[in-house]
Image (cartoon, rainbow, N blue to C red; front, side):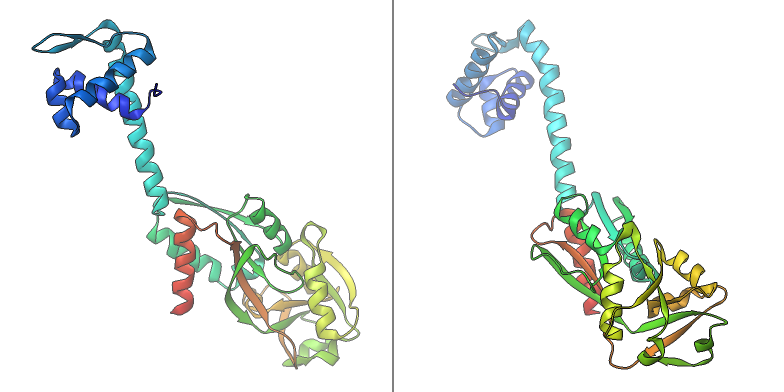
Amino acid sequence: MARMDLRHLRYFLAVAEEGHFGRAAQRLHIVQPALSVQIRALEEELGAALFERSTRRVALTDAGRLLLGEAQRTIEQAERTKRLIQRAARGETGIVRIGFVGNALASARLSEDLGTFHEAWPNVVLDLHEMMPAEQQEAILAGRLDIGYCSTFGVPFDARLAVRTLGRWPWYVALGARHPLARQPSLDVNALMDEAFIVYAAEGDDEGQLAILRQILGKEPRIAHRMSSMLSMLAVTAAGLGVTLAPEPISHMTPPNVVFRELLGDVPKSDLVVITRAGAEWGPIQRYLEMLDEGNQA
């Protein structure tokens, strides 16, 4: 015997509203005997008669009147749920959880993307978290994050992630305004060999910065301070306690007593990428990634 489902409730409501099996069957586009069988099955499942039958009409029993209200509420809730899921599948509602590094914010790319997406899909919630690249990967693979804006240096990407490149910038050196190298319009790598560096180490993780410094200098860098945010790095730099390596967009922040000089020579660029879990594109996440792809093609 079939268990009660939404189809049985829809059949029941049609008979209750029409007061006639024949008219209900026409409304449902099924034959009357099949409808009668389904109603009998529902009554057997519930252990109660739902209709008083006569040759001219059918009327609800006490059990039928009780089921009527419950069935209407159940069908209405099912329809609301259906519409909600359909809207989410189209990307019209839902939530997109986004991780980001300071470079994404300083470059204006993140704010531009957020604004463009919100304008197109205003009912989607954008949940933002500042996170290191390695932390973003872990959160995405664990299902706690949907999209991550991060840099590429020092952190190999898991094969389960899809990677989209958004931008590429040269490296700059941030110096205190009274630093001797601040008088030069640009800097060569050789000028940094004896400098002490301030590195970004949110959550104690400095591997990304150390990797790029090792690659640029060709040796182990001398580290003066490890800071948990770009603002704290620049504050210590302004005090003359070390120099900081930063992507070009950071130079637009122009904090007091800090100058930026372009780093010359054969050095790698600073990449900004977006990472997602491959195959997890759905609903608002898919809409967000489509927006990124369209922006990269423009």
